[in-house]
Amino acid sequence: MIEKLEHEVGKEFDFDHVLLTADKHGLDADQRRQNNGIRIGTPLVEGAKVHARVLDHSKAKKKIIFKFKNKTRYWKKKGHRQPFTKVEILKITA
Image (cartoon, rainbow, N blue to C red; front, side, top):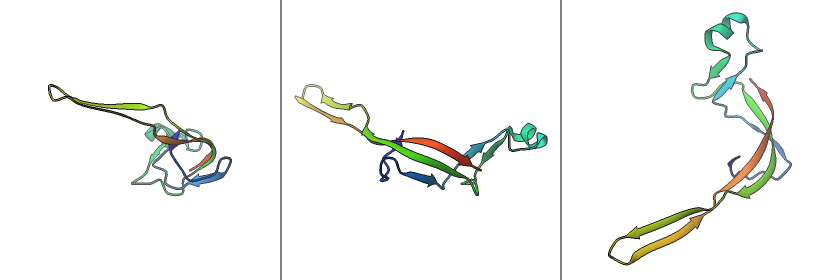
């Protein structure tokens, strides 16, 4: 679940901005021992993409915001539901 995206349900898309990848199978033995297969971007990992599919758009559970000041008869109550998008990660290319 991530912050709401403007893609339609069922549509596939790519994340181009990847900050970190981990792959123990794509590296040789020396690289695995050295960094455990983790590549950290500075600020992004070059050439890395994440292919995903939108499953659903929804809202999270309601958060209650309550303000109260003692002895002044002041109170305020309101709620907030954060919209989110549920995605399925299909493929990670590093």
